[in-house]
Image (cartoon, rainbow, N blue to C red):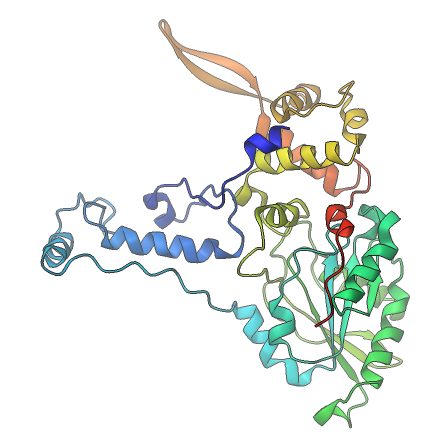
Length: 386
């Protein structure tokens, strides 16, 4: 398989430090949540490594007063020891913790295509012992043949309250309010025991449909329109919002929160699954890398809907060949200057990044058919309940 040859070897930044300081987005293979810390550390090294440009003077050649003084200090004391960048909880997670005293229950929303991987373990650690309901959204894009196995696997991990939903068509949305009412009624509310209203916090990784769930609940129970912005990319919700009413009987309010990824992803493949589902911006991982992994997954599962969709004739495991044919079919080309002995010549080539973006867009919209990315994990035994 091409994927076996093209598998990324962890995180690596190829952008020069000067570009990082100018605010340009570096090309990172697998960035995930440690991208900010790694970028900050690169900026730190640019100020402390002899011979590098001074970070405060981009035009410096290494001979300014501050650089010479630092070099002479290093000759006397030796270079300082490198320390790995420390991880600090995101501002959104701190805001969630501060709002816990106003919350009766927590609804965690996750993508139904990756029900067993990619969830943030910090949610359970930092958000206390509040009643917990797991919503596996986007069930219309997932292969639901293994639904019972998924539920059994999650029960083995201690998650006994799971609901599959589709917020676009409001499938199974009416099951949420009765389930939340049952969970809150069977738990101790502490200082909120006298309050007749319920306050629920909606959490999850980016771009799994948290805001869409709130809007869907309002449509079902209040017959009202959107209350929160939604979008097909991560980062639409950037702060913990004020309470949003979603039901009158019982009186229930929801808190929409920004998506928070785990500080460390379990494996490269788990990170690629998250990126395929849109929890990470595509350019941070690379559109062609994601398209390569998507092609590998579709061929491995024998899901050949892309062959018919793009009129390829037969399945192929070479991502370059597939993207070339996709670009030709969609007429996505680009002019590239090639230096020859007689001068520059404009050559028309297939636009591989544009073809990769269309390939990913077709997968995420369901055009290529429903896919269960965690099918391999279902074959193993469920984790024992702690």
